[in-house]
Length: 234
Image (cartoon, rainbow, N blue to C red):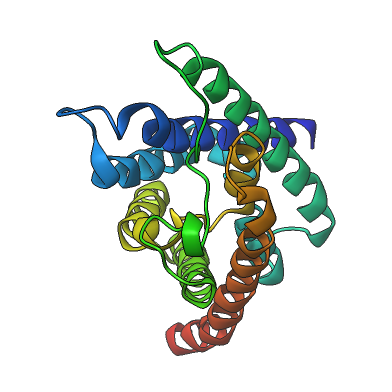
C-alpha cells in the first residue's frame, strides 16, 4: 500500500507540474508560447508517461474522480479510495508549491494571478457560466472514466491503455480549456487554487462535485455495457 500511495503522489505531482506548469510558465511566452494546444498536449503527456512508468504499481489514477470511478465499477477496492485521494491531493499541493517557487523566480514577478486554476463566470477563460462549467466537467469526466475502463479492460489491446488515456485527456483539454480551464480532476484543481490570487478557492467545490459525479456516471455507463459485451462474446 505504501508503494501504491507513493506512486499516486508522484504521478499526480507530475501531472500538475507538467500540465499546470506548461500553462503558467510556457503558454504565455510572447511569440513562442505553446498556447492552449500545447497545454492540452502537456496534460496528455503527463498521464501517458506516468501510466507506463507507475501504472503497474498503483494503477495510475492520479485523480480522485478516476479512483472513485474505478471503485464503483469494481476495478479498485473501495477501502483504498480515501488513501488514494489523500496521496493525490498532497501530490498536487506539493507540485503547485514547486511551480510557485519556479514562477516566482522570473524577472519582474508580480504575483501568481490565476495560476492555471479552474473557474466559471469571471474566472472562466472565456466567461462561461456555472451551469456550463458543471455540464462540461460532468460529461467530460464521465467519458474520461469510460475511456479508462474500456482501455484497461481484459479484452482491450494489451499495452496501449496509456496512449488512449493520454490522448483522451488531451482531447478533453482541447474541448474545455475555454470553458473551465479544464479540471476533470479535483486534486489538480485543489493544488493550484491554494496559490492563486483569484477567488478560485471559492469555486473549488464545483471542481470536486462535478468530476466525482461524472466519474459515477461513467462507471454506471460502463457497468451497464460491460455485462452485455461479455455475454455477446461468450
